[in-house]
Length: 575
Image (cartoon, rainbow, N blue to C red; front, side, top):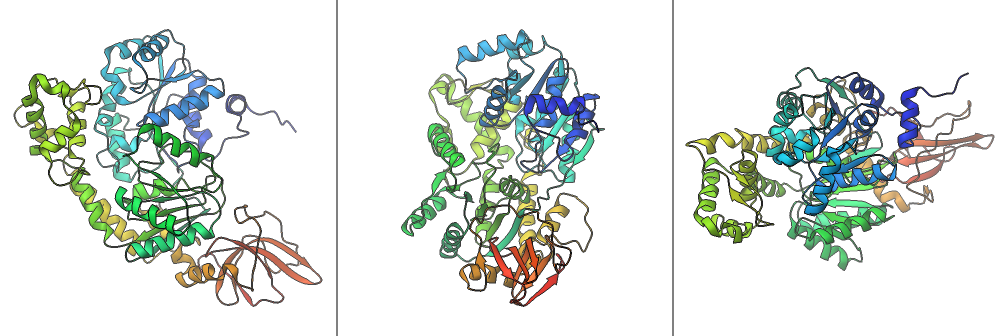
């Protein structure tokens, strides 16, 4: 037998140290190497980056990677540098001298991968240096940002089709973990890759336990967070929508003796980096965060993610729970649903969607400041145009739309902001994405539908993303499949005498093969003592009887049971 790997696998092993491809990575890589366009939908943490990084090393020329976040591209480049691979990024976080040095090196062909934001293509100097190379591939990460139908639309991303044309229409790979069929269609149209082949791994991660718990008020919320933090071992994240509620929750947990770090957009950049680094290095850290945390964060051992307040969309929710359990071990994902939180997200929708009149007022105010504009700040603009809330983001969104249309350039932060030209008559109506506010509200309604769904949670998520599953399919790993009573009793039984907790709750299920005379096998679902639903992970059978190790569908702890002494019945996973 010849154990020598094929050339593609050898390249993967040599460059990245991975023993083999996973999922559909190999199919995507082969398609890209053959010059094809592709739209790749893979769950968060499933290895999307290999789909363009490996071809980048094998193709003749430079691969351009468009990424929405500076921290995300910096993390990717640092990992590639540790592997000795020629990659760089260019963004506003670099000093002017360092940017110029890197752009010069790009022009000399020093790199195989170049990470940038779409905004970088406003620079003629950068474009000229990049185009001295053969552009072998364009990779668009977090591609849902391209579409105003997506949950995280970035106006500058809407111009990526023009960027692709500037690069000579190279083979293009669009990657995302969250895109509905309508968003997929919009991505293809915006990037001008109508025939791009779809590679979809769906969103299913069998190790994620997806639960919804209805709560009423802050007392319920804090009590549940405290219960999970004390019960489940390992790192965890609690997502909150409002910074002030996040801070109040932090104070109340501290009073209960539960320590947690906090992360939100109002922290300084250095403080955010410090908090993120400590959490990534922790074995059991608890982090309270807004949705400012997480994109590009690769921590494999997150054991639970709680949504302390309602997320704004099923897409955002799915992306956030996808950060749990990347090591393949069981992890809890629980949404604490308080109907009062819907009003918070409705305000966010309003604050994220300036109308045409507001955009016109922004331009008028910038022009009115004239020669003093360079001395102004974004706070000045907010104070002039907004009177209701400091959380209102319409100023930032309007400026992003105006920059994308090259009406405004520069930024308040470095005093480079300027008005390039005045609005043409009626232009403000054209640059505001038509119907986006209504689509955002519809996405919020979809969250409510998800909570109220009477079927399997994971089947509901599959349906939302247009993934076909059988009508009677059940995941066996959500509150609706396990049953709310079984879930509750599992939590209550964590210290009960009928079950002996295993020492390491976070270890993966054993893969032991059951003896041929055993009445159960690893993977079987049982109801123990008429109450507790468990999945068998290990079986020992001899003349004394059959003993098992099993994981509770309630609290995910591992326990041992003697089936000769405990009433039990075998269930189907969808029972």
